Image (cartoon, rainbow, N blue to C red; front, side, top):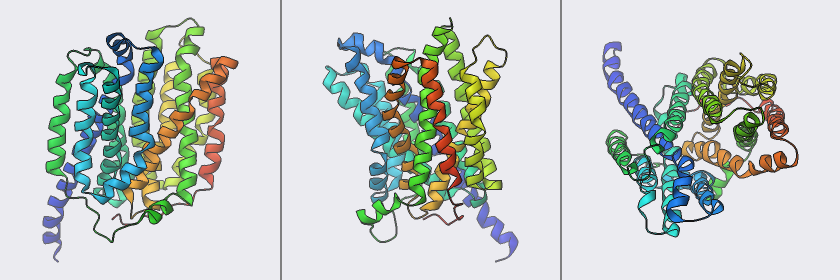
Length: 392
């Protein structure tokens, strides 16, 4: 085919691929914005339904179970049906479920509503990541994956702002998810698996070899970051600071995480996946230790927060792409292992950090969380570089 004709064919394909990536990234943004509304609204939900603090915190556990821990199973289900339904239903179910929390008659129905919202998020993440992986240029997979990841991080930063309108006015935000669900369904092509039907034995075989080590690396890294975030309010409170400093610190950390992920993804396209994974985790350790020992009275506290947030989270989208390239025939399931399953598993363990803080101090518990980056880096050093395979 002549070069001019080839370019004429390639340009529409590239535009369609970009439209798909933009649609699912926007879906990721609003899906995670909805998810981030739950925790700030727990006091209002406790007052409305007259339950205990333990009962209302159960909502977060239920949401984590259905949206994260079960995500590999939802990824498998997503490969057995048309993937575009999972990508579209994600922000729709999450939005309707979490914006209607103040409109169910009793607390048991609220638990069920939150569980359904979690299923929406659990369906969306592997489907969205698979669409980005399959339609991104092979030499820019890391960058496209990092932009998709940054969409979710940005949404998480906006979620508490949505929650600020209160339970009564929250349903108006459901309209955003409805519109994005319709756009996503219209833009994305059919994602039904075209190859022979895959049995559960083959799916179980995905979670072995280097993906197991990659997952272990991600769990340790996520637990280190979650442990620090959980201990931050208590550390700053002990040093005489309040909610304002906590909010600013978490906001800086969140923005840095998004930008760090984009840089990590782009560098992994140029220098390889495993070198970026190793560097992002190992070089963070001394700066993370300095951050834990600092406070907002130090001029370097917020710049150091930005540096640590960017560095430790630079490996997140790189890890997702690495898993996809380890299992190119099952990118949705591989994505779910590195997103929901690793984060959800780390979330189930973060209570141990709180228990250690009760036994010692929040600062000591944060340091213990930081120490988990050492075995995480060691695992990263044993990972083989994946081949740049074609995705199916």
